[in-house]
Image (cartoon, rainbow, N blue to C red; front, side, top):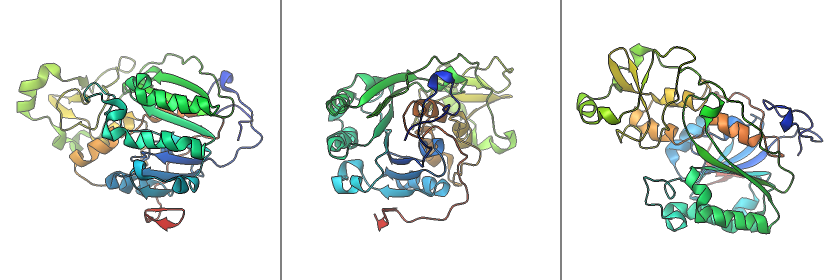
Length: 337
């Protein structure tokens, strides 16, 4: 599947050819709430795999794709051969590589799923592959193992470290991205510098529950990154990267916002906006502390769309997420999980 015209949303340097635009066939590993699915056409044929049932419940409320509730490390060759192989999308756990983790790399149990995919890659050999993780992943042993497998099987490979704030995003979420394909990849182009968009906040009447407790302010005020809701247009700066610890760890897990005399957390919906999820994306009426880890652990859609546009598959066109979809059983190829 090749592009036959200008890649949607990209400049002329990203002009690629294709014979005809066809439905994307992809498998989304570590799918979470569906960051990858929100970046591709509604008509895409996806299989989404994750072990977190809360995340899959949100995924199923927004997408009609088949889902498999299963650990990645337990997948078999037979199961993967029944999944789409045009594109593998991976967003494996970042804890084995982060500064706050123990940096055990491929020896961390949370890296087992990714190691399993590298092991199965030669047996399945998807047409293309894309990956997102923290910048330290690019220098890890895990990444080295993936590159060795890709190069041995004649994949073309490109990588980039990218932050959505470079493209006007309101959140600083610097990530390492890798794409690989058996076909020619589109070269990375220069990203025009853009000013940060203005924060889109909830109605102040609906956010009283989010106020930071006085004892937390007294103890950690000097270490909190607080945004001013009244920042003039054109002078806004991006928020800090939100992590799955947001709401549990007072510092180094994301930013706060000042509205009037109140300093509060960002709501889960506001975090999603900063990751460029559409307003139509459905989240359940769960407590904030249950939603924060799920939304903060997702993807920056702005950056992912840019990365996908450099693959020789029809993955870069954006269509709003469906919001009215039937409930699905957890299944793969029609078989209950």
